[in-house]
Length: 517
Ligand SMILES: NC(=O)C[C@H](N)C(=O)O
Image 1 (tube, rainbow, N blue to C red):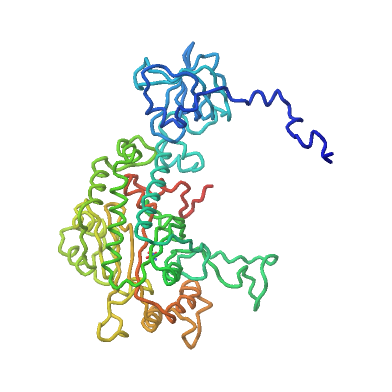
Image 2: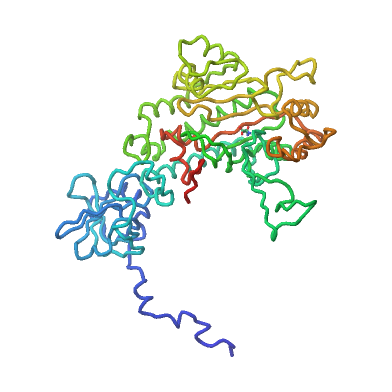
Protein backbone atom coordinates (compact mmCIF):
# COMPACT_ATOMS: atom_id res chain seq x y z
CA UNK A 1 0.00 0.00 0.00
CA UNK A 2 1.28 3.44 -0.83
CA UNK A 3 2.33 5.62 2.08
CA UNK A 4 0.88 8.61 0.28
CA UNK A 5 -2.71 9.52 0.80
CA UNK A 6 -5.00 9.59 -2.21
CA UNK A 7 -5.05 13.40 -2.34
CA UNK A 8 -1.27 13.83 -2.11
CA UNK A 9 -0.80 11.34 -4.92
CA UNK A 10 -3.32 13.26 -6.95
CA UNK A 11 -2.78 16.89 -5.91
CA UNK A 12 -5.20 18.06 -8.58
CA UNK A 13 -7.96 16.27 -6.69
CA UNK A 14 -7.88 19.12 -4.20
CA UNK A 15 -8.31 21.82 -6.83
CA UNK A 16 -11.50 23.72 -7.18
CA UNK A 17 -12.95 22.08 -10.26
CA UNK A 18 -15.12 25.09 -10.96
CA UNK A 19 -12.00 27.20 -11.50
CA UNK A 20 -10.38 24.52 -13.61
CA UNK A 21 -13.40 24.16 -15.83
CA UNK A 22 -13.29 27.82 -16.78
CA UNK A 23 -9.70 27.41 -17.95
CA UNK A 24 -10.42 24.55 -20.31
CA UNK A 25 -9.89 25.99 -23.80
CA UNK A 26 -12.78 25.92 -26.19
CA UNK A 27 -12.28 23.61 -29.11
CA UNK A 28 -10.47 25.57 -31.78
CA UNK A 29 -8.96 24.97 -35.16
CA UNK A 30 -5.39 23.95 -34.47
CA UNK A 31 -4.32 24.46 -38.07
CA UNK A 32 -5.13 28.18 -37.97
CA UNK A 33 -2.18 30.63 -37.77
CA UNK A 34 -0.60 31.15 -34.37
CA UNK A 35 0.34 34.80 -34.75
CA UNK A 36 -1.30 37.97 -35.95
CA UNK A 37 1.23 38.20 -38.79
CA UNK A 38 0.07 34.74 -39.83
CA UNK A 39 -3.59 35.76 -39.72
CA UNK A 40 -2.98 38.87 -41.81
CA UNK A 41 -1.48 36.72 -44.56
CA UNK A 42 -4.28 34.15 -44.39
CA UNK A 43 -6.99 35.04 -46.87
CA UNK A 44 -9.59 32.24 -47.14
CA UNK A 45 -12.51 32.97 -49.47
CA UNK A 46 -15.10 31.85 -46.90
CA UNK A 47 -15.31 32.49 -43.17
CA UNK A 48 -13.38 29.97 -41.08
CA UNK A 49 -14.94 29.27 -37.69
CA UNK A 50 -13.41 28.33 -34.35
CA UNK A 51 -10.20 30.29 -34.57
CA UNK A 52 -8.53 31.93 -31.61
CA UNK A 53 -6.15 34.87 -31.57
CA UNK A 54 -3.87 36.01 -28.76
CA UNK A 55 -2.83 39.64 -28.62
CA UNK A 56 -2.90 43.03 -26.99
CA UNK A 57 -5.58 45.63 -27.53
CA UNK A 58 -3.93 48.56 -29.31
CA UNK A 59 -7.07 50.66 -29.75
CA UNK A 60 -10.84 50.42 -29.44
CA UNK A 61 -13.53 52.20 -31.43
CA UNK A 62 -16.79 51.65 -29.55
CA UNK A 63 -20.07 51.95 -31.39
CA UNK A 64 -23.50 51.26 -29.97
CA UNK A 65 -23.76 47.62 -30.98
CA UNK A 66 -20.23 46.82 -32.02
CA UNK A 67 -16.72 47.53 -30.78
CA UNK A 68 -13.90 47.57 -33.33
CA UNK A 69 -10.75 46.39 -31.61
CA UNK A 70 -7.26 46.66 -33.15
CA UNK A 71 -5.15 43.79 -31.96
CA UNK A 72 -1.35 43.47 -32.12
CA UNK A 73 1.13 40.90 -30.88
CA UNK A 74 4.44 42.33 -32.05
CA UNK A 75 4.73 39.98 -35.04
CA UNK A 76 3.58 42.56 -37.57
CA UNK A 77 3.43 46.31 -38.01
CA UNK A 78 -0.16 45.98 -39.18
CA UNK A 79 -2.89 45.26 -36.70
CA UNK A 80 -5.75 42.78 -36.84
CA UNK A 81 -9.28 44.12 -36.78
CA UNK A 82 -11.60 42.31 -34.40
CA UNK A 83 -15.33 43.02 -34.58
CA UNK A 84 -16.83 42.44 -31.15
CA UNK A 85 -20.55 42.60 -30.19
CA UNK A 86 -20.86 45.30 -27.50
CA UNK A 87 -22.14 42.82 -24.90
CA UNK A 88 -19.00 40.66 -25.35
CA UNK A 89 -16.54 43.55 -25.18
CA UNK A 90 -16.21 43.93 -21.45
CA UNK A 91 -12.53 44.28 -20.42
CA UNK A 92 -11.36 44.86 -23.99
CA UNK A 93 -9.57 48.07 -23.04
CA UNK A 94 -6.43 49.54 -24.55
CA UNK A 95 -3.34 47.63 -23.40
CA UNK A 96 -5.22 44.48 -22.26
CA UNK A 97 -3.82 41.03 -23.05
CA UNK A 98 -6.67 39.01 -24.56
CA UNK A 99 -7.61 35.79 -26.29
CA UNK A 100 -10.39 36.24 -28.82
CA UNK A 101 -12.44 33.38 -30.22
CA UNK A 102 -14.51 33.61 -33.39
CA UNK A 103 -14.47 33.36 -37.17
CA UNK A 104 -11.83 34.65 -39.58
CA UNK A 105 -13.85 36.14 -42.38
CA UNK A 106 -13.58 38.39 -45.43
CA UNK A 107 -14.16 41.93 -44.20
CA UNK A 108 -17.00 44.14 -45.34
CA UNK A 109 -15.15 47.25 -44.19
CA UNK A 110 -12.32 49.06 -45.92
CA UNK A 111 -8.74 48.91 -44.71
CA UNK A 112 -8.39 45.16 -44.30
CA UNK A 113 -9.21 42.12 -46.41
CA UNK A 114 -10.23 39.95 -43.45
CA UNK A 115 -11.36 40.49 -39.89
CA UNK A 116 -12.05 38.47 -36.79
CA UNK A 117 -15.75 38.22 -35.98
CA UNK A 118 -15.60 37.63 -32.28
CA UNK A 119 -17.96 35.30 -30.45
CA UNK A 120 -16.16 35.23 -27.15
CA UNK A 121 -13.35 37.18 -25.49
CA UNK A 122 -11.10 36.10 -22.60
CA UNK A 123 -9.32 38.94 -20.84
CA UNK A 124 -6.11 37.29 -19.68
CA UNK A 125 -4.35 40.42 -18.45
CA UNK A 126 -6.58 43.43 -17.82
CA UNK A 127 -5.36 46.97 -18.41
CA UNK A 128 -6.55 50.23 -16.90
CA UNK A 129 -7.35 52.27 -19.98
CA UNK A 130 -7.19 55.59 -18.11
CA UNK A 131 -3.62 55.15 -16.98
CA UNK A 132 -2.22 53.12 -19.91
CA UNK A 133 0.71 55.22 -21.17
CA UNK A 134 0.53 54.37 -24.90
CA UNK A 135 -2.70 56.07 -25.86
CA UNK A 136 -3.60 56.23 -29.55
CA UNK A 137 -2.14 59.65 -30.28
CA UNK A 138 1.23 61.10 -31.23
CA UNK A 139 3.79 60.84 -28.47
CA UNK A 140 7.22 62.37 -28.81
CA UNK A 141 10.23 60.06 -29.05
CA UNK A 142 11.62 61.74 -25.94
CA UNK A 143 8.46 61.00 -23.94
CA UNK A 144 8.59 57.37 -25.09
CA UNK A 145 12.22 57.10 -24.01
CA UNK A 146 11.09 57.72 -20.44
CA UNK A 147 9.37 54.30 -20.43
CA UNK A 148 11.70 51.80 -22.08
CA UNK A 149 9.82 48.93 -20.42
CA UNK A 150 6.58 49.81 -22.27
CA UNK A 151 7.97 51.33 -25.49
CA UNK A 152 8.77 47.98 -27.22
CA UNK A 153 5.02 47.32 -27.47
CA UNK A 154 4.68 50.04 -30.10
CA UNK A 155 4.46 48.12 -33.40
CA UNK A 156 7.39 50.04 -34.90
CA UNK A 157 9.58 49.29 -31.89
CA UNK A 158 8.52 45.64 -31.97
CA UNK A 159 9.58 45.59 -35.63
CA UNK A 160 12.98 46.97 -34.64
CA UNK A 161 13.40 44.15 -32.14
CA UNK A 162 12.55 41.58 -34.81
CA UNK A 163 14.90 43.29 -37.24
CA UNK A 164 17.73 43.18 -34.73
CA UNK A 165 17.12 39.48 -34.22
CA UNK A 166 17.19 38.83 -37.99
CA UNK A 167 20.50 40.66 -38.33
CA UNK A 168 21.97 38.47 -35.60
CA UNK A 169 20.71 35.34 -37.38
CA UNK A 170 22.26 36.41 -40.67
CA UNK A 171 25.62 37.31 -39.21
CA UNK A 172 25.70 34.03 -37.27
CA UNK A 173 25.19 32.29 -40.62
CA UNK A 174 28.02 34.29 -42.13
CA UNK A 175 30.48 33.41 -39.38
CA UNK A 176 29.34 29.79 -39.37
CA UNK A 177 29.93 29.50 -43.10
CA UNK A 178 33.46 30.74 -42.55
CA UNK A 179 34.14 28.45 -39.58
CA UNK A 180 34.52 31.25 -37.05
CA UNK A 181 33.93 30.08 -33.47
CA UNK A 182 31.32 32.04 -31.55
CA UNK A 183 32.66 32.83 -28.08
CA UNK A 184 31.71 34.58 -24.83
CA UNK A 185 34.10 37.07 -23.34
CA UNK A 186 33.87 38.54 -19.82
CA UNK A 187 31.95 41.64 -18.83
CA UNK A 188 34.09 42.23 -15.75
CA UNK A 189 37.72 42.88 -16.56
CA UNK A 190 40.86 44.18 -14.93
CA UNK A 191 42.09 45.84 -18.14
CA UNK A 192 41.06 48.89 -20.16
CA UNK A 193 41.31 47.75 -23.76
CA UNK A 194 41.19 51.19 -25.33
CA UNK A 195 43.40 52.77 -22.66
CA UNK A 196 41.13 55.79 -22.78
CA UNK A 197 40.17 55.80 -19.11
CA UNK A 198 36.48 55.59 -20.05
CA UNK A 199 35.91 52.54 -17.90
CA UNK A 200 33.23 52.20 -15.26
CA UNK A 201 35.09 51.17 -12.11
CA UNK A 202 32.91 48.67 -10.30
CA UNK A 203 35.35 47.68 -7.56
CA UNK A 204 33.12 47.33 -4.54
CA UNK A 205 34.39 48.71 -1.26
CA UNK A 206 32.19 46.45 0.78
CA UNK A 207 33.64 45.36 4.13
CA UNK A 208 31.31 42.39 4.54
CA UNK A 209 31.79 40.84 1.11
CA UNK A 210 35.41 41.64 0.42
CA UNK A 211 38.61 40.39 1.89
CA UNK A 212 41.27 42.74 3.02
CA UNK A 213 44.59 42.32 1.26
CA UNK A 214 47.30 44.86 1.99
CA UNK A 215 44.69 47.24 3.35
CA UNK A 216 42.73 46.90 0.10
CA UNK A 217 39.05 46.15 0.45
CA UNK A 218 38.11 45.68 -3.22
CA UNK A 219 35.73 42.79 -3.76
CA UNK A 220 38.12 41.35 -6.35
CA UNK A 221 41.23 42.49 -4.44
CA UNK A 222 42.06 44.75 -7.38
CA UNK A 223 40.37 47.42 -9.48
CA UNK A 224 37.81 45.89 -11.82
CA UNK A 225 35.85 47.54 -14.62
CA UNK A 226 33.03 46.71 -16.96
CA UNK A 227 34.56 45.93 -20.33
CA UNK A 228 34.98 48.57 -23.05
CA UNK A 229 35.74 45.95 -25.71
CA UNK A 230 35.99 42.17 -25.92
CA UNK A 231 39.01 42.45 -28.19
CA UNK A 232 41.82 41.56 -25.78
CA UNK A 233 40.05 38.43 -24.57
CA UNK A 234 39.11 37.53 -28.15
CA UNK A 235 42.80 37.70 -29.05
CA UNK A 236 43.51 35.11 -26.33
CA UNK A 237 40.75 32.84 -27.64
CA UNK A 238 41.85 33.28 -31.26
CA UNK A 239 45.28 31.96 -30.25
CA UNK A 240 43.48 28.85 -29.02
CA UNK A 241 40.88 28.03 -31.66
CA UNK A 242 41.58 30.17 -34.71
CA UNK A 243 39.05 32.71 -35.91
CA UNK A 244 36.53 33.85 -33.32
CA UNK A 245 33.64 36.28 -32.92
CA UNK A 246 31.31 37.57 -30.26
CA UNK A 247 28.37 39.94 -29.91
CA UNK A 248 28.44 41.27 -26.39
CA UNK A 249 27.66 44.27 -24.23
CA UNK A 250 30.36 46.89 -23.81
CA UNK A 251 30.41 49.93 -21.56
CA UNK A 252 31.93 53.38 -21.88
CA UNK A 253 31.80 56.11 -19.26
CA UNK A 254 31.77 58.82 -21.93
CA UNK A 255 29.85 61.97 -21.28
CA UNK A 256 28.91 62.36 -24.95
CA UNK A 257 25.31 63.47 -25.32
CA UNK A 258 24.82 62.50 -28.98
CA UNK A 259 22.52 60.22 -31.00
CA UNK A 260 25.56 57.98 -31.63
CA UNK A 261 26.76 57.28 -28.09
CA UNK A 262 25.47 55.08 -25.31
CA UNK A 263 27.13 54.11 -22.04
CA UNK A 264 26.12 50.49 -22.66
CA UNK A 265 26.03 49.13 -26.20
CA UNK A 266 26.47 45.89 -28.08
CA UNK A 267 29.61 45.37 -30.10
CA UNK A 268 30.11 42.72 -32.74
CA UNK A 269 33.78 41.78 -32.65
CA UNK A 270 35.88 39.28 -34.55
CA UNK A 271 39.52 38.31 -34.44
CA UNK A 272 41.49 36.42 -37.09
CA UNK A 273 44.64 34.41 -36.39
CA UNK A 274 47.51 34.00 -38.86
CA UNK A 275 46.45 37.08 -40.77
CA UNK A 276 49.18 39.27 -42.21
CA UNK A 277 47.37 42.17 -43.80
CA UNK A 278 44.90 44.83 -42.80
CA UNK A 279 43.27 44.32 -46.21
CA UNK A 280 42.02 40.89 -45.10
CA UNK A 281 40.37 42.41 -42.02
CA UNK A 282 38.64 45.06 -44.13
CA UNK A 283 37.60 42.39 -46.64
CA UNK A 284 35.99 40.47 -43.79
CA UNK A 285 34.00 43.51 -42.61
CA UNK A 286 32.90 44.24 -46.17
CA UNK A 287 31.89 40.64 -46.85
CA UNK A 288 30.04 40.43 -43.55
CA UNK A 289 27.99 43.58 -44.08
CA UNK A 290 27.35 42.66 -47.70
CA UNK A 291 26.09 39.28 -46.54
CA UNK A 292 23.70 40.92 -44.07
CA UNK A 293 22.56 43.39 -46.75
CA UNK A 294 21.92 40.65 -49.28
CA UNK A 295 20.39 38.12 -46.90
CA UNK A 296 17.94 40.60 -45.41
CA UNK A 297 17.08 42.74 -48.43
CA UNK A 298 13.90 40.77 -49.09
CA UNK A 299 12.92 40.12 -45.51
CA UNK A 300 9.45 41.10 -44.37
CA UNK A 301 10.64 43.26 -41.52
CA UNK A 302 12.93 45.28 -43.80
CA UNK A 303 9.97 45.91 -46.04
CA UNK A 304 7.88 46.95 -43.02
CA UNK A 305 10.54 49.33 -41.78
CA UNK A 306 11.19 50.83 -45.18
CA UNK A 307 7.55 51.59 -45.85
CA UNK A 308 7.14 53.55 -42.62
CA UNK A 309 8.79 56.93 -42.69
CA UNK A 310 7.44 59.43 -40.23
CA UNK A 311 5.03 57.11 -38.52
CA UNK A 312 7.42 55.53 -36.09
CA UNK A 313 8.13 56.36 -32.51
CA UNK A 314 11.51 57.69 -33.58
CA UNK A 315 12.93 60.21 -36.02
CA UNK A 316 13.72 58.47 -39.29
CA UNK A 317 15.72 59.34 -42.39
CA UNK A 318 13.91 59.27 -45.72
CA UNK A 319 12.88 56.02 -47.42
CA UNK A 320 15.09 56.94 -50.41
CA UNK A 321 18.12 57.33 -48.18
CA UNK A 322 17.57 53.97 -46.50
CA UNK A 323 17.16 52.34 -49.91
CA UNK A 324 20.46 53.93 -51.04
CA UNK A 325 22.19 52.52 -47.96
CA UNK A 326 20.96 49.00 -48.74
CA UNK A 327 22.10 49.32 -52.35
CA UNK A 328 25.46 50.61 -51.16
CA UNK A 329 26.00 47.63 -48.88
CA UNK A 330 25.52 45.31 -51.80
CA UNK A 331 27.68 47.31 -54.22
CA UNK A 332 30.94 45.83 -55.48
CA UNK A 333 33.62 47.58 -53.49
CA UNK A 334 33.84 50.37 -51.00
CA UNK A 335 36.45 53.16 -51.18
CA UNK A 336 39.57 52.74 -49.05
CA UNK A 337 41.59 55.89 -48.40
CA UNK A 338 44.39 56.56 -45.95
CA UNK A 339 44.07 59.02 -43.10
CA UNK A 340 46.71 61.16 -44.84
CA UNK A 341 44.62 61.22 -48.03
CA UNK A 342 41.54 62.02 -45.97
CA UNK A 343 43.25 65.05 -44.43
CA UNK A 344 44.24 66.23 -47.91
CA UNK A 345 40.67 65.80 -49.21
CA UNK A 346 39.32 67.77 -46.26
CA UNK A 347 41.92 70.52 -46.63
CA UNK A 348 41.30 70.85 -50.37
CA UNK A 349 37.54 71.05 -49.98
CA UNK A 350 35.75 74.39 -49.85
CA UNK A 351 33.92 73.34 -46.72
CA UNK A 352 34.08 75.65 -43.70
CA UNK A 353 34.85 73.25 -40.85
CA UNK A 354 34.55 74.59 -37.33
CA UNK A 355 37.75 72.66 -36.53
CA UNK A 356 40.41 72.77 -39.23
CA UNK A 357 41.59 69.33 -40.36
CA UNK A 358 45.19 68.81 -39.32
CA UNK A 359 47.50 65.81 -39.64
CA UNK A 360 48.02 64.26 -36.22
CA UNK A 361 44.60 65.24 -34.87
CA UNK A 362 41.65 62.89 -34.72
CA UNK A 363 38.95 63.35 -37.35
CA UNK A 364 35.98 65.27 -35.98
CA UNK A 365 32.37 64.28 -36.62
CA UNK A 366 32.05 67.06 -39.22
CA UNK A 367 35.11 65.67 -41.06
CA UNK A 368 33.78 62.12 -41.00
CA UNK A 369 30.39 63.30 -42.26
CA UNK A 370 32.07 65.11 -45.13
CA UNK A 371 34.12 62.05 -46.10
CA UNK A 372 31.09 59.76 -45.92
CA UNK A 373 29.12 62.16 -48.13
CA UNK A 374 31.82 62.97 -50.68
CA UNK A 375 34.07 59.93 -50.87
CA UNK A 376 31.30 57.39 -50.29
CA UNK A 377 28.84 59.65 -52.16
CA UNK A 378 26.33 58.88 -49.41
CA UNK A 379 26.02 55.45 -50.99
CA UNK A 380 28.85 53.21 -49.90
CA UNK A 381 30.64 53.10 -46.59
CA UNK A 382 34.24 54.40 -46.65
CA UNK A 383 37.32 52.86 -45.03
CA UNK A 384 39.88 55.32 -43.67
CA UNK A 385 43.15 53.58 -42.84
CA UNK A 386 46.55 54.14 -41.23
CA UNK A 387 45.87 56.78 -38.58
CA UNK A 388 48.70 58.43 -36.63
CA UNK A 389 49.94 56.19 -33.85
CA UNK A 390 49.67 58.97 -31.26
CA UNK A 391 45.87 59.09 -31.48
CA UNK A 392 45.14 55.36 -31.54
CA UNK A 393 45.15 52.54 -29.00
CA UNK A 394 48.32 50.89 -27.71
CA UNK A 395 47.63 47.46 -29.25
CA UNK A 396 47.64 48.55 -32.90
CA UNK A 397 50.45 47.32 -35.10
CA UNK A 398 52.83 49.99 -36.20
CA UNK A 399 53.49 50.69 -39.86
CA UNK A 400 57.14 50.57 -38.87
CA UNK A 401 60.26 50.62 -40.94
CA UNK A 402 60.02 47.19 -42.53
CA UNK A 403 63.78 46.62 -42.29
CA UNK A 404 63.92 47.46 -38.64
CA UNK A 405 61.05 45.77 -36.84
CA UNK A 406 61.72 47.56 -33.60
CA UNK A 407 61.35 51.06 -35.03
CA UNK A 408 57.80 52.22 -34.57
CA UNK A 409 56.44 54.23 -37.45
CA UNK A 410 54.23 57.28 -37.33
CA UNK A 411 51.07 55.45 -38.34
CA UNK A 412 49.34 52.21 -37.37
CA UNK A 413 47.70 49.50 -39.46
CA UNK A 414 44.12 50.32 -38.58
CA UNK A 415 40.87 51.47 -40.13
CA UNK A 416 37.65 53.22 -39.25
CA UNK A 417 34.61 52.49 -41.40
CA UNK A 418 32.50 55.61 -41.97
CA UNK A 419 28.87 55.80 -43.05
CA UNK A 420 26.62 58.84 -43.62
CA UNK A 421 25.20 60.52 -40.50
CA UNK A 422 26.37 57.89 -38.03
CA UNK A 423 30.04 58.29 -39.03
CA UNK A 424 32.20 55.56 -37.46
CA UNK A 425 30.32 52.30 -37.53
CA UNK A 426 33.30 49.95 -37.24
CA UNK A 427 36.96 50.04 -36.31
CA UNK A 428 39.68 47.47 -36.63
CA UNK A 429 43.39 46.91 -36.85
CA UNK A 430 46.28 44.54 -37.09
CA UNK A 431 47.40 43.85 -33.55
CA UNK A 432 51.00 44.39 -32.46
CA UNK A 433 52.05 40.77 -32.00
CA UNK A 434 55.74 41.46 -31.32
CA UNK A 435 56.38 41.80 -27.59
CA UNK A 436 59.13 44.42 -27.77
CA UNK A 437 57.18 46.62 -30.16
CA UNK A 438 54.10 46.37 -28.00
CA UNK A 439 56.05 47.32 -24.88
CA UNK A 440 57.63 50.22 -26.72
CA UNK A 441 54.25 51.43 -27.90
CA UNK A 442 52.81 51.18 -24.38
CA UNK A 443 55.74 53.07 -22.86
CA UNK A 444 55.36 55.85 -25.36
CA UNK A 445 51.74 56.17 -24.31
CA UNK A 446 52.80 56.34 -20.65
CA UNK A 447 51.54 52.84 -19.76
CA UNK A 448 53.64 50.83 -17.28
CA UNK A 449 53.63 47.05 -16.94
CA UNK A 450 55.51 44.48 -14.89
CA UNK A 451 58.11 44.45 -17.67
CA UNK A 452 59.13 47.94 -16.52
CA UNK A 453 61.49 48.53 -13.60
CA UNK A 454 58.94 50.66 -11.77
CA UNK A 455 56.28 47.95 -12.24
CA UNK A 456 52.64 48.55 -13.16
CA UNK A 457 51.16 51.91 -12.31
CA UNK A 458 48.73 50.76 -9.57
CA UNK A 459 47.84 54.29 -8.53
CA UNK A 460 46.67 55.20 -12.03
CA UNK A 461 45.35 51.80 -13.04
CA UNK A 462 42.22 53.14 -14.71
CA UNK A 463 44.08 55.52 -16.99
CA UNK A 464 47.08 53.32 -17.72
CA UNK A 465 45.33 50.29 -19.09
CA UNK A 466 44.75 48.38 -15.84
CA UNK A 467 46.20 44.90 -15.60
CA UNK A 468 47.67 43.99 -18.98
CA UNK A 469 50.30 41.47 -17.87
CA UNK A 470 48.19 38.56 -19.08
CA UNK A 471 47.83 40.28 -22.47
CA UNK A 472 51.61 40.60 -22.71
CA UNK A 473 51.91 36.87 -21.88
CA UNK A 474 50.10 36.16 -25.14
CA UNK A 475 53.07 37.70 -26.98
CA UNK A 476 55.57 35.45 -25.23
CA UNK A 477 54.18 32.09 -26.23
CA UNK A 478 53.35 31.66 -29.88
CA UNK A 479 51.69 34.84 -31.05
CA UNK A 480 51.07 34.85 -34.81
CA UNK A 481 50.25 38.01 -36.79
CA UNK A 482 46.57 38.68 -36.26
CA UNK A 483 43.91 41.32 -36.60
CA UNK A 484 40.26 42.03 -35.99
CA UNK A 485 37.50 44.55 -35.79
CA UNK A 486 34.50 45.75 -33.81
CA UNK A 487 31.18 46.95 -35.24
CA UNK A 488 28.90 49.11 -33.11
CA UNK A 489 25.86 46.89 -33.34
CA UNK A 490 23.27 49.46 -32.26
CA UNK A 491 24.67 51.91 -34.82
CA UNK A 492 24.45 49.21 -37.48
CA UNK A 493 20.77 48.70 -36.64
CA UNK A 494 20.28 52.48 -36.98
CA UNK A 495 22.06 52.55 -40.31
CA UNK A 496 20.00 49.74 -41.78
CA UNK A 497 16.63 50.84 -40.37
CA UNK A 498 16.94 54.58 -40.93
CA UNK A 499 16.36 55.31 -37.23
CA UNK A 500 18.42 58.35 -36.37
CA UNK A 501 19.50 57.63 -32.82
CA UNK A 502 20.81 54.59 -31.01
CA UNK A 503 18.66 55.66 -28.08
CA UNK A 504 15.84 54.12 -30.08
CA UNK A 505 17.49 51.01 -31.52
CA UNK A 506 18.68 49.90 -28.07
CA UNK A 507 15.60 48.74 -26.17
CA UNK A 508 16.94 49.92 -22.82
CA UNK A 509 19.31 52.77 -23.65
CA UNK A 510 21.71 54.09 -21.04
CA UNK A 511 23.58 57.33 -21.51
CA UNK A 512 25.16 60.00 -19.36
CA UNK A 513 22.58 60.89 -16.72
CA UNK A 514 20.00 58.34 -17.87
CA UNK A 515 19.41 54.76 -16.79
CA UNK A 516 15.65 54.64 -16.48
CA UNK A 517 14.90 51.01 -15.82
N1 LIG B 1 37.50 44.61 -31.57
C1 LIG B 1 37.89 45.78 -32.01
O1 LIG B 1 38.76 45.94 -32.83
C2 LIG B 1 37.17 46.99 -31.48
C3 LIG B 1 38.12 47.93 -30.78
N2 LIG B 1 38.71 47.34 -29.61
C4 LIG B 1 37.33 49.17 -30.35
O2 LIG B 1 36.84 49.20 -29.24
O3 LIG B 1 37.16 50.06 -31.14
